[in-house]
Image 1 (cartoon, rainbow, N blue to C red):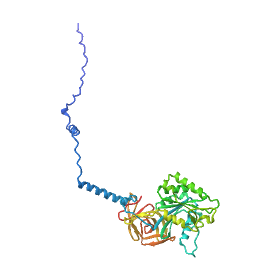
Image 2 (image 1 turned 90 degrees about the vertical axis):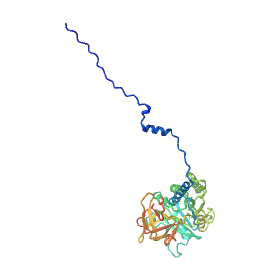
Image 3 (image 1 turned 60 degrees about the horizontal axis):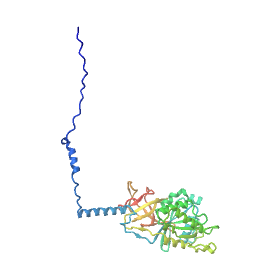
Image 4 (image 1 turned 180 degrees about the vertical axis):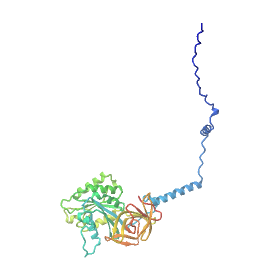
Length: 384
């Protein structure tokens, strides 16, 4: 008989085992260098030499001087001087509270017009639409001279739709006359313009206007105006605002009012208002020797001279035929040449050779200049 076949054994599986980990002596060279660097002691700090410290202080001082030119708010390295002969004010209020009428009386009592000259009502509203509507749409510049002091006056719109005009004007002035109607008291636009003035830390003189109207309540208006200051977060110093009572229509003003007295207890003219402006509105503090900086805040047009740019000279001086640069922060600067320089006096633009810092002026000869651009010279930086 045949023998049975041999039993089949299970197949053997070959398993590849991983190699053993390398010994410490086989650690790569770069790892050994990193380990040695961690274990090495930190190098001792060496104090800088006297020459190095002096060089560092010199560089820091140079940076401070360069920032003093670029940032007008940094006055630590600038020797400022006060201009006692100039005051810059803006008249702000709610619509139809009598701003332009009050300016008319201020101009008339400053002998701006001749005795035989025919003067139209609301002379500052020179635009046809303004005269038709009886409101101010565009801010206007003028100036009066009182006791040897030039007072630049800017009449601003009172309607909320033209609030941008007010915001730009506040950058040109050092103080504001806040007109409040003696009957209506503070209104919505009063709150808006006052908020802007307080935010810029402008000196506010409250003028309670139209006290000659029947039903006027000046004491109530003063109380509500004080409440408005408090609600807007005014400081204690700002809440101690000076007050003038006036009638812009009659051209009278005073520091006290008595509705039962003759002429309401006011003076026969606007001298108390002018005196208040001179004493309360801060004098411009400027650097006359610094490079020119002038921020354009408004534009006008003349049929013969073309575009006219208006603004306040922030520092330095500007003169006719002067070579300047025009630009904005972070933008490309372009060159230009000033044609003529004007100031506002007696309700007219008058040509002048040069204007110093702290004063408001207008210039011609720059056909492409825009609002918000800075006119500068001597390496000065554009204003924001």
